[in-house]
Length: 144
Image 1 (cartoon, one colour):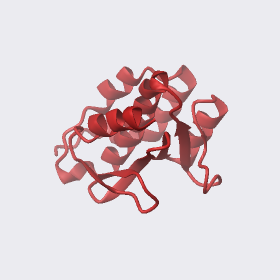
Image 2 (tube, rainbow, N blue to C red):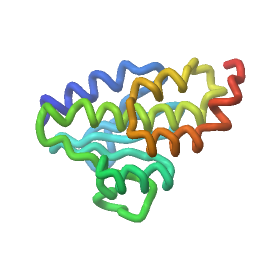
Image 3 (tube, helix red, strand yellow):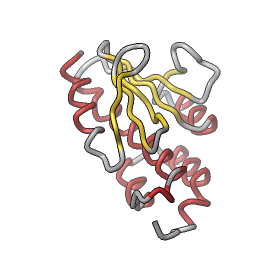
């Protein structure tokens, strides 16, 4: 699974504001403004930090699994079993990235979250939940 995970690391590390670091339990962590948005393990595991409400919607829709170590947290796990799973892993990572960017927006990272959310093509109920969760940040187009 290393090749698929390597592609994911290569793509995510090119997103504006993303830094990579070794994860304390192996793999690569993705960090924005000092905060981890998620990490990958060579065995094909992608762990993501989201809000609990978004996490619950992802679990309900079968788009992710509870985090394998801390299942009652706001984290989720997505398993990359083949190359066909990479686009869905990237979509979930982008969602976690948008959430993290909105939290640190004032740190100079320019972002148009509405455009990015449309590109994710989330299921309608999940899209509505994410937009409701992000509403304050989406409505406040504060200058960066």
